[in-house]
Amino acid sequence: MAEHPLGKSELTHYTNLWCRQRGIHARDLETHPCADDVVALLAWRETIWHKLNRSEQASWAGYWNSVYHKKNPIRSKALKKLETITTQAEHRHLKTIIQRAKIKALRQNPINKSAENMTAKDADSTQSVPWD
Image (cartoon, rainbow, N blue to C red; front, top):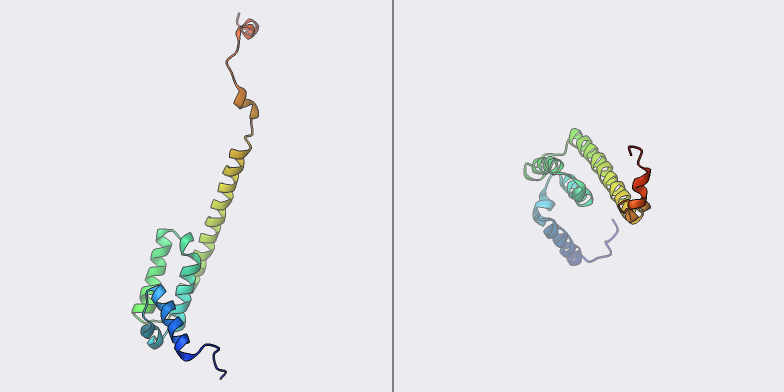
């Protein structure tokens, strides 16, 4: 096995730092039977958390509880659900971006430019009223 470019103490330091930033203990990660699943859930959370609604965040929290605290492996059903959540969140986020761009464009370029110069009719225009 090839030696890692960082020394063992540096690797341990950066691993501890990474774990601390995510709110877990490094020793828990080292001894966890499903450490790959824990890392996968954390990576998924970092990439898409800001696009999720509260219900989707609660689904992730349930999977996190099962994998990290109860030390169960993540199930294929959970992976499919996370994939569905990802697709829905990405679609919703894209839709929001498109709506915001459309609103911004409409604010910058009003469709009816004559609406800016609308004034009340003057006295000359009252003579052409059909009901007179």
